[in-house]
Length: 133
Image (cartoon, rainbow, N blue to C red; front, side, top):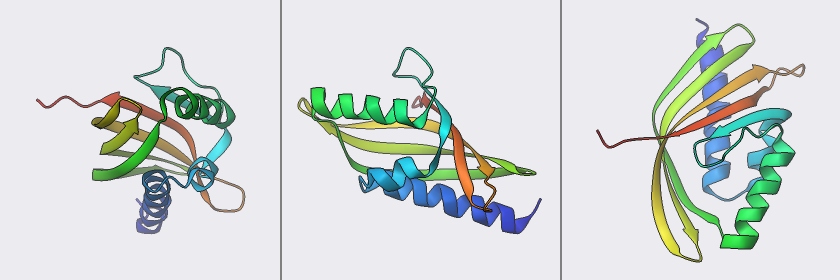
């Protein structure tokens, strides 16, 4: 296991999470490859591209006033596999809608791939609900 790879992937994941937490959507969505896929426990189907996810996000904003208030990551793990790596962590997100604010507790896995320019790019994200047990 390359320490450098783990550090690079961790830095890419941290930047993605911070952009998400701060509502910097161009930076957040820019961390994903255009053909990245997304599996969320809150949606009925897999999303097949970053553009599809961004369009869904805009629907949430338009219909519900959706916005991120804050986000914290804990228990991070990076598992490198050559030019791919799996990042997993627990995530606690504070969201606001027209209905008010709530805290969402989830587990997240993000698969990163090394791009031609050497940068680590997210190619898949999977969120599942985290139980309190």
